[in-house]
Amino acid sequence: MKEIDKNNKSFENIKHIDENGIEFWYARELMSVLQYSNWQNFERIINKAKMSCQNSDISILDHFIDVSKMVQIGSGAYREQIDYKLTRYACYLIAQNGDSRKRVIALAQTYFAVQTRKQEISEKEYSLLTEDEKRFYQRNLTRKGNYSLNQTAKNAGVKNFDRFHNAGYKGLYNGENADDIAKRKGLRYREDILDNMGSDELIANLFRISQTEQKLKKDNIQTERDANKAHYEVGSKIRKTIKELGGTMPEDLPTPKKSLKQIEKENKKLLKRK
Image (cartoon, rainbow, N blue to C red):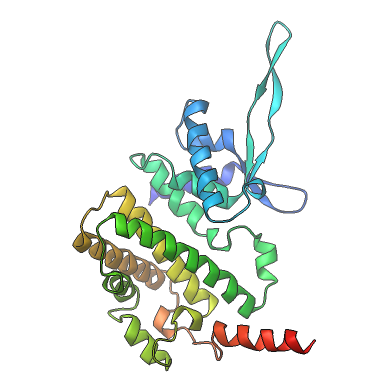
């Protein structure tokens, strides 16, 4: 715990706040905390993070802001020093693409993951959304996350994806699979359970999805059995963390009165009338 607290303070110590109250980090300061001594090596990690950002259909320019400047190197000569202002999401992607053998990288992944569920919009903007707007936003992220997880799981040897996803649900929901969750929520046959979750429940599942993908990659899992086991373990650990923090268990969170699909249909009808 002391090591985690120490590194969390390091990440906090290099955090900056701009004139609009938005937090950011400088890439060169982050490089030092993540124990990289060579900018060229660290820049390769940044480029991988940029690619991850682009693959998620999120604007790179919103999260990796070029703040390069000319610095004096002696004898009156100057050279360009490349640097970036990074959002929390950008820092998270950098940590996810860093050297997983470094203990500090794992700590960075945990630190920056906590608030990254909001991704490209700021915390202030997110807080102004209605609950249904937050649900749509988080549902979109889980959809993208599941797509990416499925690709990684396929490479790990998964063929039965229902069993694979149920392993994660069982870990997070104390033994409940997707059908059990649907029945508890009173859903119709084949109705999407994620469309019938509130924003907090979606965030818990998004964290399960993203961390499972990282574990499959980091542990170089190559069999369906091990992939299912990993998904269950990630779900269980997230559940344990929620309990330790005194949070509400996922199965105890309220089910919204309307599914997102139903809200979408109602919105389309309203638009047609206008």
